[in-house]
Image (cartoon, rainbow over all chains, first blue to last red):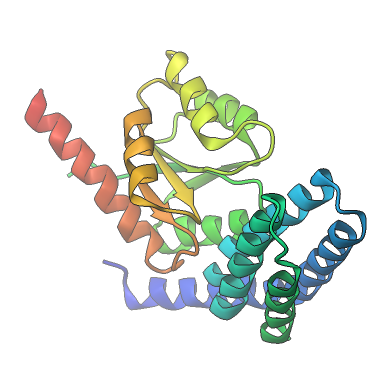
Length: 106
Length: 134
């Protein structure tokens, strides 16, 4: 069981790391957008795999910082990109999920 | 009761390492060591001898399951408990991870304030089972 002081200190540190992440989130979303657009333009397996990886990482990370809706949108983007990799035409769903992640991350 | 003293957190995502380290050290009160990938994890685990390893499943290069096999093959790290951290937990995968020798699985995203409690429960349940079995 944490003491009140220790809990307050932990919450203070959590606030600091969340603040730093908020600035990084915009950058991560911009990078993710570039990867998705490049994958759509070039339709190469390598580009697609890179975009899937970036969406997967953001899905796990954003929610841990309290950006639950960004994380859920990134998870939706990951699933859509995986279906595209499997041969389905899911670009509309992927771009919609990307737009949702960007809106929630603003 | 035996307590966790040191945790090794392995994740390729810097932002997860930052918030995980904050949770484990500031909330859990444990010494936390970090690794960015599987090979580094095996080296750090051998040197630091953590009480438990929190291991990301999907990492470029050496993924979590391959890293776990590497840890189990080396005498210095063979018995260190490993808990997987993953964004995808499905029932069949959970069983597969346990079959590989993982103590359990923690889902991503995680609540940083609650992570140490979840980890402590998993590890202490395993230590209690060991004590009963010995």
